[in-house]
Image 1 (cartoon, one colour):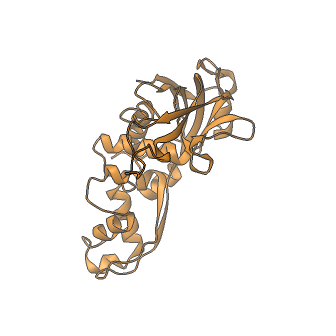
Image 2 (cartoon, helix red, strand yellow):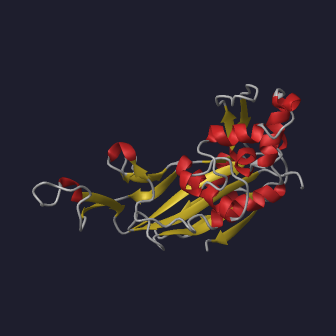
Image 3 (cartoon, one colour):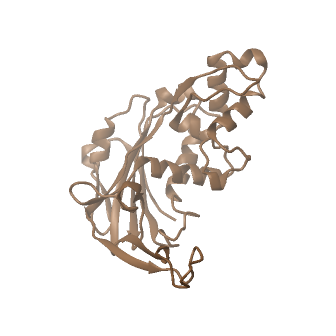
Length: 281
């Protein structure tokens, strides 16, 4: 695979239509908001969706959701120790060898990084390594403050049998959603220097780009009905060198998104920097 020779920056604009893009478990699972009332989707949630899209495309992913496990592993520790057992005994003790093997094995490890500090299996040697990945992504924030709808729901049946025969209290509940339509924006970068360390290639960068364009495919749930989450545009910047023609901050500032979701790039602020605007699918 070809080495990544050029720094990459990117921006993603997406729309939320009467959905809960990322619930806050500390606030009744209401859509996350900042102190200024802007909607927020955490970077962890975004990386989860990227991992899911990579897994859908047949890539090997280390951090899998429990309901999407394709190898039967019940935890990250199980997955790691099972793989460690496949290595020769002498290699299991060499952190640099294990580092290279786990990066080669799992695309999300060589993309986002991972800390491997799990309890060892009975017949494996202790190993603890940290991988720093080249792909970084920021939390997404809405362009304008959002309003949240509180919707009361009622189950048609009891979850548990009651002595009185009446409906139990657990038949009542609440759902929360962003009211109407809101546009969110997030930014990210890919570092060639860190890519050299993990073996992240130019082909891997293309896989990440495809995952961003299709971020919400196969992501439907009761909180995010089909069609309620939509990638509007992905702006993909390719620098002409490893260090970058401009800082990521300057590149990200060149992208403006209005409340309607229209994306514009200020070419004058980043002369000579190549980029493409890819419409979401």
